[in-house]
Amino acid sequence: MIGDEVLVASGNFELVYSFGHRHESIEGDFLQLLPSNLEISNDHMVMLAGGGRFVPASLVQIGDELEMANGKFITVEAIHHVVRTGVYAPFTMSGTIVVSDVKASTYIAFQDSPTLILGEWMTPFSFQWIAHLSQAPHRLWIHMFGISGKETYTEEGMSTWVHMPHQLGEWYLEQHVAVMGVLFIPVFICLLAVSAVEVFFSFFDVIA
Image 1 (tube, rainbow, N blue to C red):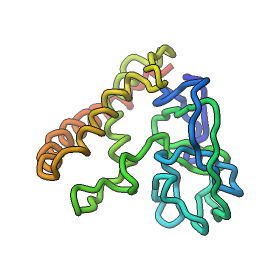
Image 2 (cartoon, rainbow, N blue to C red; image 1 turned 90 degrees about the vertical axis):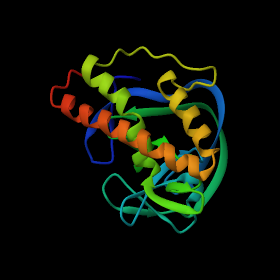
Image 3 (cartoon, helix red, strand yellow; image 1 turned 180 degrees about the vertical axis):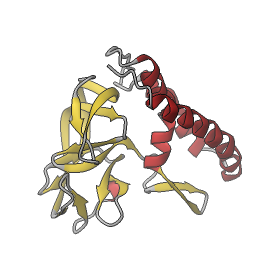
Image 4 (cartoon, rainbow, N blue to C red; image 1 turned 90 degrees about the horizontal axis):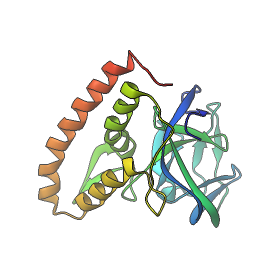
């Protein structure tokens, strides 16, 4: 629930300030990573051993090591496809969460890659970083006005705070690489500016 505290990758507890996706009755396809018992959608990201990289769950292979809450690692021995009723994607201020004792992201990747790909160029910009930056306006709102506990969702269960950025992201990736390159710079600068303001307001946090 919004306002609950959950364990995040840093080892601290953080408030759930929003849900990117929440629907109690919709069915979803998940990957079950054993023996951790973590069940995660293809696009959601999980932390792998070796530099703390967040990668889409679709890229996880048998033999990969997942980073656990205690900093140790667990080797993926089997991957099963399962269908579950109910989809939930809680958002925390750090953009991370611990699920089934495994460090995971609260965000999704838009490509089957840990970083943004423009044409043939694999950029250094991780989807974890991009997604976290895209939610800076939302977090700034929370820092300024606190958590209301009331959110609206689409019929598919996507938060209205996330729906528009999600649509823009999908539209962006359908454009020509030249257009993608040109648009990336001003959007990047604007989000950095909002992120800087967010950092300032975080010193006077009113979250409650």
